Length: 464
Image 1 (cartoon, helix red, strand yellow):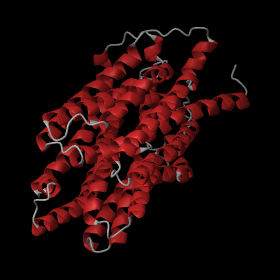
Image 2 (image 1 turned 30 degrees about the vertical axis):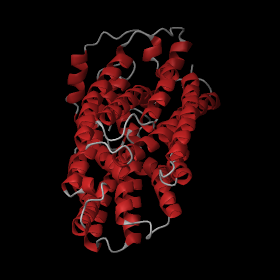
Image 3 (image 1 turned 60 degrees about the horizontal axis):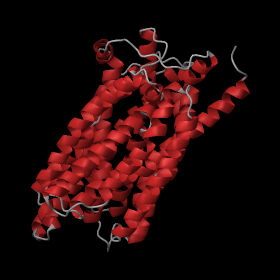
Image 4 (image 1 turned 30 degrees about the horizontal axis):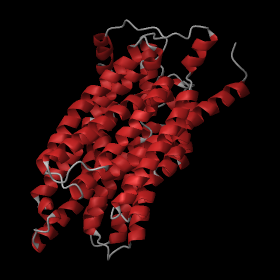
């Protein structure tokens, strides 16, 4: 017999709030990691370009391996502390906080050891982030099968990310844009401790529908699945909706990584301190990290009404139109330039925040098609990451290679002539509108093949 509605939602709200705390912790940590690690290793640790590329290649390979590996372990393991989404977060939280701190304490400046430092920083952070992140994503699928509940989960998660995204603003303000690196290190240690406590709370309270059903039926011990990974992979990679989504999201991650890694570098070069004050610059960088969450929260009724498919489609059209507008207007209008960057960043990152909704629908579709008692959520998120995550490494390698071909390395060393400096700045501006136009065109074509467009009209099961 189903529990009364008020009891169900009282339980659901507690689980949603605990889920949101890990969203806060992820945003708190990842906003800083993604925003600063390239800038710090390039401009403060003076890593050599060859070592930067080696680190990104090693990271890309490990990133491709660990997602499906952890996904298979979490879905197929017979041990409850591995298979349980909640316990995974509970026990792995301290390791993520420790891994987050590794990049901010230099091992060397401008030597081979700096390259090893970047490799270890990227791989250890991604290992812990992926292991917890898979469990956290699966919670969004398994806490409730109802579309309305999932949208509320995203709303609360984005509200938490809104507060978590302020970490960049505080770092910019208290470190004077990294000029006081000691303050930056202290702030990162405090942020790591707070994030660990938040994730531990999630690990104690974020029960899924399947945890509750298992408890009610007095059969809480996890059972190891005997299904072959070969069969699962064949099912996933012959699923049109799954392939379409992961290809689109590959380009979304490429674009999002480009924004988070290089926006500060480009703005610092194109708009020097004489153009905008340090406080305005810090406020702007902080806004970049919080506006996507505000956009998701405010637009949740629109997503509920028209569905995530058409909201995502609008993002691709926006990239193309505003990219063309920036190309026509040029770099002569700083206010328009900053507005475009803010709008592009906000809409792109906000759309990416809806990733769990289409993947949840794919997981539901897979479970219904193959009569599974429980979705193979970790495998779906893990195999999705196998295709998508290389974009995190490819994006900075691609952009750094372009910048260095125009003399960015010499610019950092103060050896670039004025004419070549102007050419480099022109290249930076061109990248700002070319990347969105190219990404938008490719995504628009691929996204037209996705068929789970109307699940917001259904009661919960991901069928179009």
